[in-house]
View 1 (cartoon, rainbow, N blue to C red):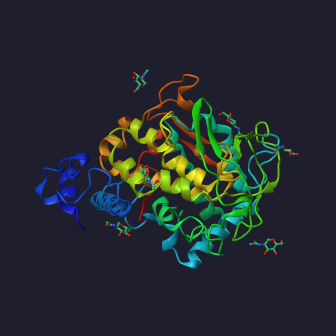
View 2 (cartoon, helix red, strand yellow):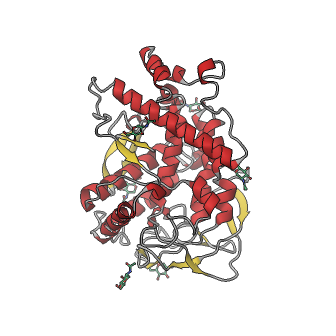
Amino acid sequence: MLFTSQVALGLLAGTLANAIPTPQDEATTTSLPTAASTDVAEASEQLAQLAEYAQGLVNDTLEESSSKRKRGGCTLSNLAVRREWGTLSNKQRKAYTDAVLCLQAKTAKTPSSLMPGAKSRFDDWVGTHINQTMTIHYTGTFLAWHRYFTWQYEQALRNECGYTGYQPYWDWAKTAVTGLAASPILDGSAYSMSGNGAPVANQGPIILGGNGLPEIVLPSGTGGGCVTSGPFKNMTVNLGPVALGLPGGATESNGSGLEWNPRCLKRDLTDYINKRFANATSIARNILKPKDIWDFQMTMQGYPGSGDIGVHGGGHYSMGGDPGRDLFVSPGDPFFYLHHAMIDRTWWIWQTLDVKTRTGAAGISGTGTFLDSPPSPNTTLDTMVDLGYAAGPAVRMRDLMSTTDGPMCYIYL
Ligand SMILES: *[C@@H]1O[C@H](CO)[C@@H](O)[C@H](O)[C@H]1NC(C)=O
Ligand SMILES: *[C@@H]1O[C@H](CO)[C@@H](O)[C@H](O)[C@H]1NC(C)=O
Ligand SMILES: *[C@@H]1O[C@H](CO)[C@@H](O)[C@H](O)[C@H]1NC(C)=O
Ligand SMILES: *[C@@H]1O[C@H](CO)[C@@H](O)[C@H](O)[C@H]1NC(C)=O
Ligand SMILES: *[C@@H]1O[C@H](CO)[C@@H](O)[C@H](O)[C@H]1NC(C)=O
Ligand SMILES: *[C@@H]1O[C@H](CO)[C@@H](O)[C@H](O)[C@H]1NC(C)=O
Ligand SMILES: [Cu+2]
């Protein structure tokens, strides 16, 4: 393991941050990149290196602390490893989609008096996301909230649907190279997350904006209609729409989106958006350039007015469709969780480059409202994250800053 000695020394000194190889460090000069390569093949190698560094650092930390009693009891032996979809066997892929279908077949916990459209256990997550959308995006809680949301979803798949694996992730850099519909994750086979929507001719452009953000015009994709293949071929979307961007620029909504509005799952796979906003260079840049959490999370979601929608928007909008293009209802497409696992993985890697700062109070920036509108108090380590009827308990931000040092215990390969 490449970085063991530096990491161990860093731990002994009590300053994990110092374990980062610096350019002055002769032994490790060639070890970690400091700026993203504009060559996507090189950037992919940089990402692999950064991921390996993150794994090594966390593994070593868990080894070092195995004798101490950590609150969550996370050790190398109970560590969950989340993997990229393409590295799973067909059997593992099907086990995952079967568990999602199981969740969709179970009764909702959300009272129908509060959300008439929440028909299944799967919908509990969609409903919670709709209800909190304006307080979990462009806020101080954005990353941690979605980390906890994805983790609890993974727990539900395991504890309520007998799934024995972990949450897989979508590596945007891979599909930016292969094209979405040609990738094992979205090729429409029985071992994919289902494929594209049926093609719709002459779709207009996608115009992003609203919620106070300036317009960005993007091409639509090669689908647009109902998903016709794979495990989610027959899936019904029950909730929404709330703010669904349609090709041509219109926005569709159905009030609060909490009524029952059954319709098919639609996708509009758009390689242009994946390649433009979420290629290997975009990811490497998002990890290597921002030195503070504000810059990191704004780069990821796109600085308003920059014309860039970041890897977060890049992933969502390259999926397209309904509810993929609806900021509120997007978890209604099961692919959402693979996207957000990758968001979380990107944050996780970035955090390992300066663990102490980036998992502590200085690792949080922002307030409790969308771009601080209306103004609200700063998010802190004590701010609560509550997933409503989807899952409990409500936890504090401090429990979510690390994936191995709180109630959770996982890494990404
Ligand atoms: C970290 O531990 C995981 C789980 O045991 C293992 O799969 C991975 O190869 C390790 N990575 C490194 C770089 O040590
Ligand atoms: C879709 O539903 C039909 C009718 O219930 C069923 O025969 C078919 O196997 C289902 N397809 C998938 C992919 O679940
Ligand atoms: C809104 O939902 C109702 C059912 O509750 C449905 O009849 C109507 O078509 C929906 N409208 C839109 C724009 O989705
Ligand atoms: C890849 O991403 C970078 C950074 O986001 C961007 O500047 C570049 O244009 C993208 N490449 C393509 C082919 O769109
Ligand atoms: C909230 O955060 C901003 C930006 O970090 C900071 O300037 C401000 O002082 C903070 N406000 C309070 C009340 O802590
Ligand atoms: C929606 O959110 C509010 C506060 O954010 C909460 O009081 C309410 O219980 C939530 N409703 C549901 C159905 O989760
Ligand atoms: Cu979200």
